[in-house]
Image (cartoon, rainbow, N blue to C red; front, side):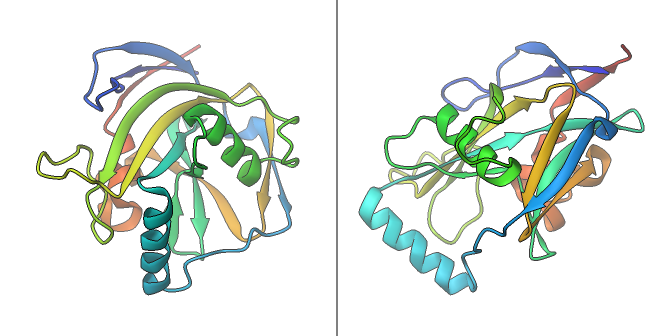
Length: 211
């Protein structure tokens, strides 16, 4: 199956008019296994807040990258999400290291969370277009799909990239995480369950083309 994706992001985070065809493949073509768990951080909201403040004081703006990965099930696009502690849903990705490029950092994060080997030799992730940027004006607010004009020193920036899967692939997931394929109709405007970033992905126009 192919879909035509309309939308995307320019360098300033605004939507563009570009369109591109993306082949998405049935979920049944992918294989799933497990590996040793990744130690989880943020035992409490207070702990996370303090860690973010410490990192900001040391490194400045927190820069993150996340992957939008699609599969097909019942002729409907599904988004791959990681579930943490049976209650928190995240797009695969995470924080960049100081000086690390968006593409390299996203590939490193995907390999760590979705691949068998962390040396990067098993999967050559195909990172595509940037779909958008989200900003956190301060430590305690949610992410916004724009930078408010009165905010000069944002605390976090997150970029979303479309990642194109091959026809078949093996995913190896840490035992501390679950990998789920969630239908677009379930995440659409479901801010309460999935948060503003994930629920916004379904707003992109993905027109299904039978191949």
